[in-house]
Length: 194
Figure 1: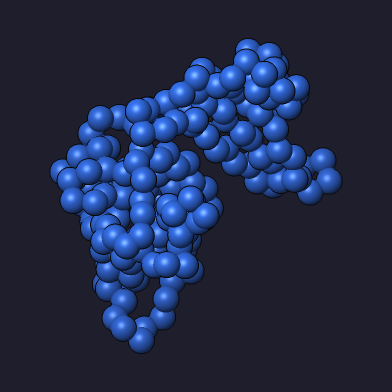
Figure 2 (figure 1 turned 180 degrees about the vertical axis):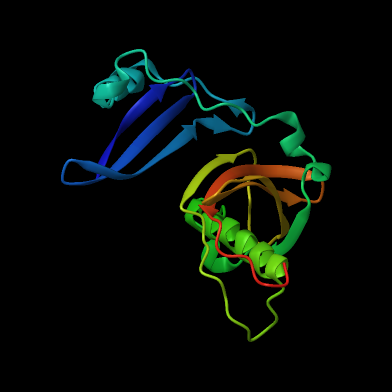
């Protein structure tokens, strides 16, 4: 596992991770951490910026890679999504900062895709559960997900090709979008009735 700094902003740091099996990359991830207090983003100290420059991943160079694109505005509105799944945060989802942990949120997106898949193929309780979890996620956090809390996950299918389904997902509390995700997963075989 390789971890390093991809980008350093005025008040944020983007870390990159790559999982390697020998010389082959088998997984990757990225996380952006923003230094902030109740008044908003804070400027990173110059000493910290200098230290982080020494941790840059080799392929990004001093200038860093491109920033992840911001979600399109329609992704922040309920009307963009066609499927909804309610979820309630659990105490086991909470990290040391009293927020729902990013890994728990990723499993929530999995849960939304699973619920959509079951509903789409008409599987009833006790029936077979399709094994079609997404193999790729790009997640952007827009607000804090906390405990206790009742949330909804939204989903729409952006496109379907011969081997994959491309999903757009969001997590909402009321009308406020707290995060979006793009996921790609296997298409599977449609049932005879669908």
